Length: 374
Image 1 (cartoon, rainbow, N blue to C red):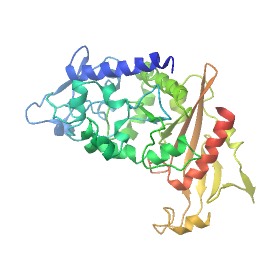
Image 2: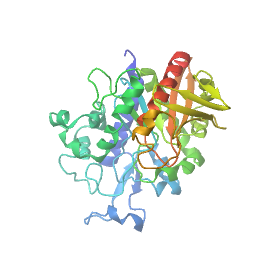
Image 3: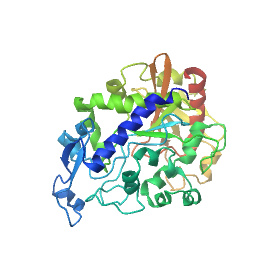
């Protein structure tokens, strides 16, 4: 990776500086972390006027009241995990969850950090040293040999480990996914649109759409490193779960390229039509396909799709005979003649990654992307 990594290093160096300012209180804009009675749980009994210092560009996240009241500046940011210059696939997230308690791994408190915690390690070392090899994806036995063994108790670790099989499926769709990350496959790189914790992210989306002050910072510290990390990834793509990653976000912040190519990709899928119903039939499933007005592809698993569906997997095991729908949007940002594919998927009322019942459809989608857009 010859030039990896001047640009990747710029991103990593920036966030080391942001978090160092936040920890040390140097060269930043002071923010009052106790913004109202609803956050009295931040009081640690010793200091009820805790302040933090926010780096200038990050301070724009806290200037708008509708965002400010939802974000949690008293918790250490988690802007990324992994290595943007060496990764198998890129995972886009909106922001890290949490921030409603005094989690010792991220809670700033009065600046005295418990030993064997993430924040104590970052304070002594750096965020990049913590995040580069994506240690929270590692199995407990592997972490036991690591100096950061205490990450076993970090709540975010289980959230990420539940996605291992799905991320491997996207990275190597023709291989049998494993519950543990293989040694011969590069770790993913996960990047947050907003690096600050919030338990109420869906409420932030309108505030972000309406806030033009954020545009320069988002383009510089989210869009650019995202596109560069896609280029460096072995899969040449990014994936994002959740309906909030909608076309309006890309139209506002990604000002180059073909923003939405879902309809184009649908033209290459092996769609059959019977009595006006469009569907894709794979080894185990039958997906009914709908192309939505905003170019979403919706594969629907019917209650009578295939024999496997009636064998007690998630669609019928709760006793509800209804169709299960999941939506897919495919974006392509073309920059300097290179395609940058971003696959966005979501299901109504859920922010979880797709169940295995949809993986055969995804395999067809990935095949079409690879053959026509990579």
